[in-house]
Structure formats: structure tokens, C-alpha cells
Image 1: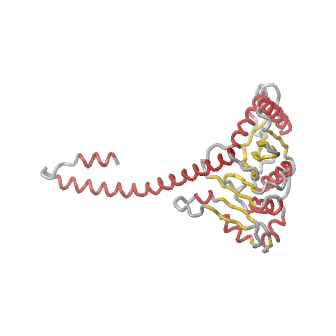
Image 2: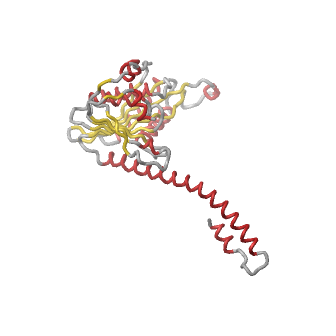
Image 3: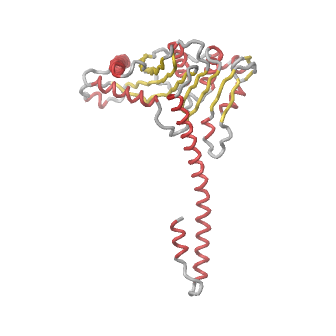
Length: 318
């Protein structure tokens, strides 16, 4: 735009020979530039709308961390980038050239809640040599997490923050929260975070995990997932001794190859099933400038006596 204005200012005055032709050529170029700029403006508007949504989401998520109500539970979940073994004080030549290094996946949970007037922050690391970043892993680990927390009926609202990966944005994970709403929490909010949503509590716990592994490998050899579990437990004990007592870190070796619940995909979803807690409400659905803004929808489950089929569930998720 500045170059265009400079070119306009440099145009010859009308009484100079050839000025009209120069002005005509300039206006043609200016029209082409404005057409190209109009396309870029659409992209810029989408980006601006996207990052404004990211800012709103970040503010809401941090507000839940700083000002969590006593009847609410805040859970953030994410998959960590796979780590590889073996690791040790000195990397042997066969380790370096090995083409079959073992990978270890981690599913991290951050749980924040009040118990007996005390605010609790707990981090859970589910490590496994089963590299399935899928909904089955997330659903099984999420159910195990709720059993470990053992929260009472005084908690009535559950907030779950997850990215928009297919392992969380799926029928299976969504229906898991429907079951949770039926059994434990009257109201569940599932928040899908937009791309480039910034660092959350899961990123912090994954950074700690990498540091624990590196520190442990200075004096020990980490050759498999069991050694990794020992390394992370040693690092967690050291971190908890330095941090406030409200901070708790849990390391779990997830080694069971569990199949998906087949009934989830047959009668329980295909047929219309009565459920007292399966009404979905998509909030912020009026955001239309950016085609990705639907991922910021906040899906809530509230107690009703309505029915929902698999097709209706698909319409909400797609």
C-alpha cells in the first residue's frame, strides 16, 4: 500500500506529455493490486479472528486455573511427543546407529480441584510402549484417572480441555464424557483448543518429564519402558520435595492392550437410546469468519430425558 501511494505521488502532472497514458497504466496496475489485496484481506481477517479466539480461550483456561470454583473440576489432557530409548551416560555406537530404537508414548493429564478446603494440582503421566495415539487409549486412561481422583458428589461441573486432534475429537471420546455425565458429574464441558493455542499445563509437565529422563540418564541406563518409569518416578519425587505439598505427580505404566468397547459402536449408539445426560449444546457457533472457529466450540452435557442417535452425535462433531 505504501509503494502504491508513493507511485501515485510520483505520477506526472496532466500538462506533461504522455501523462494521461502513464495515469491509465497506473490505474490498471492499481486495480490489479487492489484485487489481489482483497483476497489477502480475507486471509488476514480469518487469521485475526482465529487468534482472537485463541486469546479468549487462553484467558478462559487460565481463569479456571486461577479462580476455580469449589464445585468444579478442571482437567487438561494431551499426548506428548514420543520419547526413544535406550538412553545412558555414554551413548554406545550400536545405540546411535540402531534403526529399531524403542519409542515410548505419554498421555498427560492435569487435574485441578478443591478437597476439604485445600486446592489440589495433580499431574498424571500414563507412559506406554503401545504407540496408539487414539481414542481408545484416551478413554481408558481418562476413566482410570477419574477412579484415582475419587471425587465426591459435591463436584457438579467438569471442564475438560483438549486439542483438536482426532484422538479427542471423535465419537468414542465424546461418548465417554456422556457416560461420565451420567455417572459422576451433572454437567460436563468439553473445550476444543484452537491451533497455536499456546503453552498449557500439559506442556509444562512434558518439559519436566524430558528433564527427569535426561537427569536420570546421566548415571543410569534407560533401556525400556520399565526403566523409564523408574526414571520418571525418581524425578517426580525430587520435584514434589521442592514444590508445595498441593502438587502431586503420578507415573503410571500403561501396558494393557485393551480393545474398544464394541457395544459403544452397536446398540448403544446406532439405536436410539434413552439417556438422562446426553444433550449437547455447541456454544460460540455463531463465529463464521474463520472456517476453523468451530473447533473452539464448547460442548456441554446437561441432564435431560432426550434421546440421541449416532447420526445426531455425528452432526455435532462434524
